[in-house]
Amino acid sequence: MNKLRLAHIYAAHLNIYGDRGNVISLVRRAAAHGLTLEVEDINIAEPEKLFSDFDILFIGGGQDKQQELVAADMLTRRNELADCIEAGTAMLAICGGYQLLGHYYQNSAGEKTSGLGIIDVVTEAAPEHAGAEGIKKLDRLIGNVVAELLVELSPENSFKGDLNTLVGFENHSGRTKFSSAQVSPLARVVRGHGNNAEDGFEGANYRNLFCSYLHGSLLPKNPHLSDELIIRALKARQPQALELFTKTAAENKLELAAHKKALSLRA
Ligand code: GLN
Image (cartoon, rainbow, N blue to C red):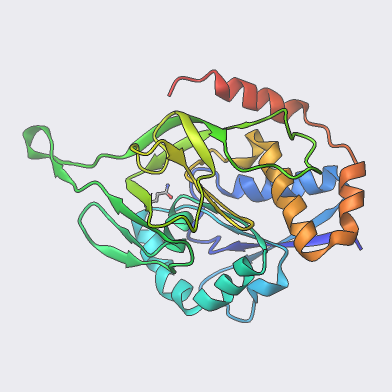
């Protein structure tokens, strides 16, 4: 049975700038490699849908308000999610979802939303300030991003040695900083802002958890990362299906053309 299951966590609230495209991309990449990827949304007050029943977990980004709305429910499921990540479940977390896996997200008004503290990072927005004519101004980090991938791709990943850049679009006020070496950066910024527009890194990696500030959505233009998530999911939960994945070569023309185009875009 070559079937994988993906949970789109808080799909109703955390899903902006095309983040659902990451789920569609994983379904397509799995099919291109002979596998079926079933998708289920897990929203607020659905504790009966266990994270441990899924091979891949995905959480998208959201406006401050959306993050506040899911935070309380997310905290009740902290240990369940931490156990999955420690056990090696493959997970992708984008922007606002990434921030809530850290200790907290502080918005530009200085208000804190508690995070899960599963990854040792904190996120703070630049304080709002009065712009021209006293209009409230927020310093958001917005634009096209190109970054050099720092995570090593698996030997089974057909892009290994070929594709080592990440491309996408960012739009966030939060600046994420690592509090220890528990997490390592996903990529090094070549163009754009990344985690905090200071340390030159984009995203984070811990075990099979990949976090990124890149929207657009991220995966359709970065097929090497889609394949890496699927490979890690198979290794962690269905190693018997890995052979099928590797021997079924996927068509990559469109994805590679989109990646190449994004490399040429201005910041
Ligand atoms: N609300 C958060 C911020 O502004 C996350 C935004 C997002 O997910 N794009 O930083």
